[in-house]
Image (cartoon, rainbow over the protein chains, first blue to last red):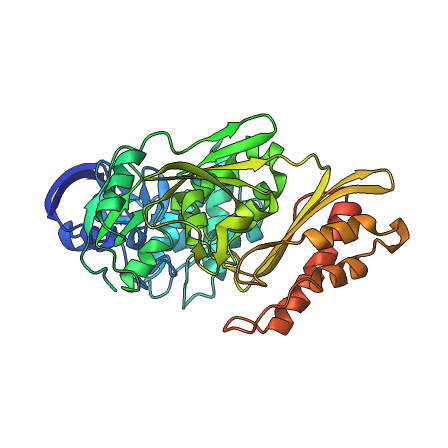
Length: 159
Length: 289
């Protein structure tokens, strides 16, 4: 058993007795109660468990919890709140970018990383960026529209 | 879908990592980016006694200009290669290929050392290593050895690494070429390639002075097609046609049928990609795919 300490959504946690085989996704859900991070396939295909580790999107089912010792983690709970949605969340609502909501946390965390790293000039760029996240409801159209809209609003805001 | 139990160590030096591997008597496994290993652990297809995590070792992540070669540290993430201006300027085929490597979140974690050590026959970095004739530096209990990429890959998911050895650096010779192309077809963007070709040439007016060709997805390892390189260079300018080139490339491979595609379909794809690659390299003045 290993003790780790990490920051999640700005809050520091010291967590004792972590088994080396515990996945980061399970630590977030089972030890910290942050069930916004969804677990779909547990082998890095569906993207539902995507979180940010030190500013980069990462599949939390493909990282051991003990590897996150000292890391700064952002989960979907840290993006915004029901009263104060962040830009991308508000555009998902605006464009009806979700139906059942299972893939949504992963879509949002991937979308956030895309918005920060890529110009996203075309829908093809957005679709490439989303290629690692599966959605079985929406047909992706409204997710792409939500990210397209957030990308446009993001560049409008820049001087 | 949870890994079987294992011990976990995260040494701060390569020497300590090798010691841990030696002590595990072949039952240990190296953990770098984990993007291939973690699925295997989650499925319990791999059940190592100890995981030796390299991520706390300083100084294994770099992209260094050594004049006629670019050296890349084993822990360098795919994302760093994708966004590196040095790679874009000196290893343009690699730069173009990186966006085909899996998906955003995977590229943020995956490493070049991990990809080569996993040795998937349809993964871009092993193919690029073969294409560029890279030298792979490996550390083990007996010290350092360097293996050319051609000798490193033995079979699908199999390379010449001993269980207590670690890839620490890959050196890519810079090609003195002026036109190139990279083409790939996968079932979904970012998935493993069904077929892919990398082509690079040096041209002087009408003459083709040199050519470099590698393919993947069509054999148990990525292949450098030296015979096809010579045949392409030897073609008279009037015969240097996409269709002719496609036949030359296709004559060098005989892909098997598998779950993802028949051998016949892979050959068909490779021919079409070869045509596109030659057109890009010769007509468009040479640039990305």
